[in-house]
Image 1 (cartoon, rainbow, N blue to C red):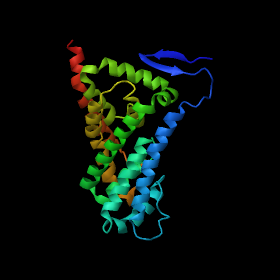
Image 2: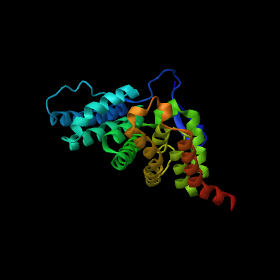
Image 3: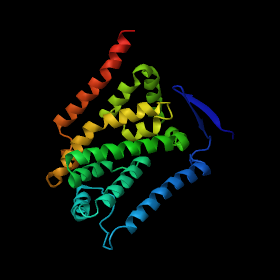
Length: 259
């Protein structure tokens, strides 16, 4: 049966009538595979510049215990092989953001544990913005079928909000970045689909992630005191983030009321 065009909330998509069909074409899979291969080549090249040692501790952290083991082992390398550790950190963080791999919060905690507050925040903001931008452009190339397949309802909502707030879009995008209204992963992949200009996406990401980055990196300094991820964002931290989000979107709301 031929493909059918479906329009939801102003977003036009192409869906196949057969259920269970893989949403990516061969070309799109090849493009994503090429990006993955580029990251792998970079990591292998980095590995070859490190001293011969047992690197069995190197893995993506999935718990606070994993993170503490990684921190304990990397501390000895950070002072002697600072450039390699920094490059490796950036490659892993950007890779995780590009392909929507969960766990970047652990990487942000690690930045605080290894580099302190100011360097850690700068590192997290840089890598998170680079990773989000990489995800944005990859989604622009091949993300449309995945977004429609995974988040059709969220996409319809996001499309309507973006269309309604075009004149104050930067403030709205800042609000989304600061508050958990929509997942950051969704914002990264859906923004090019609903025609959010990259310069607005970039500015909102770069500025909007600073508060959460500061909270997470600061917690990473006292990593041993964290008993669970629930300790990371206390009531005061969450209230502060929401307050910043409300302030960022207020000019847009006032502008709409004045019309």
